[in-house]
Length: 97
Image (cartoon, rainbow, N blue to C red; front, side, top):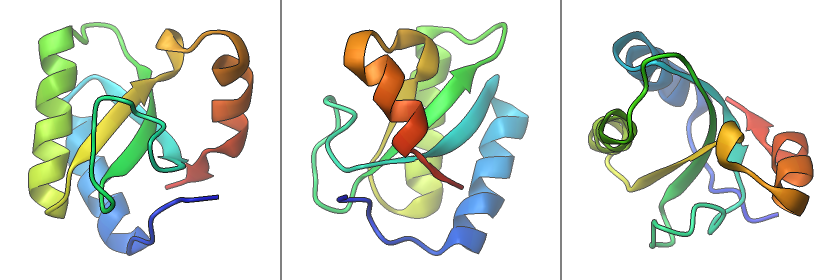
């Protein structure tokens, strides 16, 4: 698997701040290039569950906020947006944060 190496304690701290600010629940890290809209070898692809009140703009803000905190690009994939094979595989292969 091609999951980027990241300091988990720092990641958890920033994830908690993002979850407090945005209606998301971060589920885990996905292998690189799982979020097709984010490019870069150091980018993080994150799997999240949508909470009531999350808009597309809010999702973009959460990506930007987390990217600024971590100093690297972040792509958030929503569990609710998965279909077919990805809906089965992504939740199973996501590494817990």
